[in-house]
Image (cartoon, rainbow, N blue to C red; front, side, top):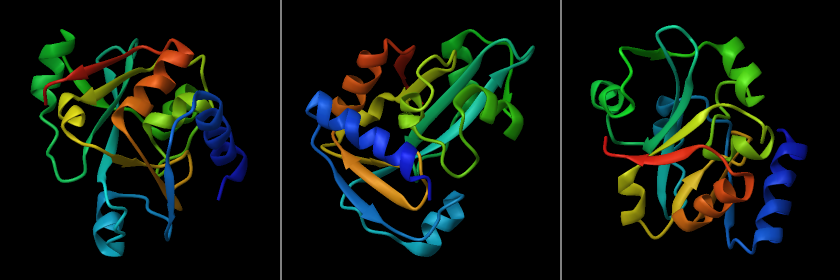
Length: 164
């Protein structure tokens, strides 16, 4: 458990007035782990894909509901990229200062200077609450989609909503 990164998230939430709840659970490294543990957080859980363009000059974090299939061709077209591939563990650590399993929209909190663009499934706005890792894969924080937007606006992050 990375309590420093997790606590940084909660401190920011308190500063920004973001309401949240926290659910502790066994470590989750993949969608299969999420399905195996069946943690009920009372919200739509979001999964994340770390992507890069063909020449590794642009990086993206794509976040979408756990059950939804990522249509990378559609995302590629929306970004006007010729090709998208998954970023490797080394680039993930360099760009977001995080290891696999703890990827989250909230990674911006521990690396606000990142040049990663955050892509959020536009469907997020249909939900009252979503669940994401607080930079630690042994917990899920539940908050409103507007809370995520407040975090990104606070850091002047590069983010956008995309149709997936």
